[in-house]
Length: 151
Image (cartoon, rainbow, N blue to C red; front, top):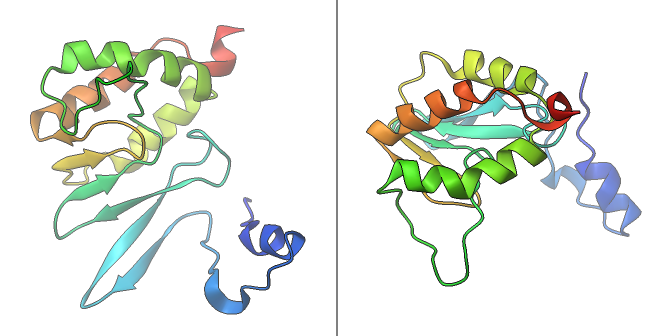
C-alpha cells in the first residue's frame, strides 16, 4: 500500500544512492543488527504516511519518531520526563494538530500492544522511562479528537 519514496526523492535531487536505501514492506520487518535485530514497526500516518518506528527487543527501547514529541519553551528542555502531568502540556498541542486521526493512533496502539517496552524515546521530546511509558500510552488512548477528528 505505501511506497518508499526515498530512492525517488534522491534521484530528483540529483543523487543516485544505489543500494543505500532499502525499502521496508508496509507490514514492517526485522532488520538484522549484529547477532540480533531491530524491529521496524509500522506507524503509518503518525504523523506522515509510510512512517515507521523502531524497537530494540534487547534493550526494550522503542524509538517513537514524532509520537511523544513536545514543544518546549525556550531554555526549558529536559532529557527525561520526570513530571508526566506537566509534560502533557508540552505534548498536547502537537499531537492534536499533527496526528491526522484517532484511528491512526488506535491502529498503532493495537500494533504495539504486548511489546515489552521499557523506554520510549521520541525524536523530538523527552524520554519516557518505565512507569511513564504506560502513562504516555494511556494518555494517547484517552485523546478524544486529533487532526481531522477536530473538523
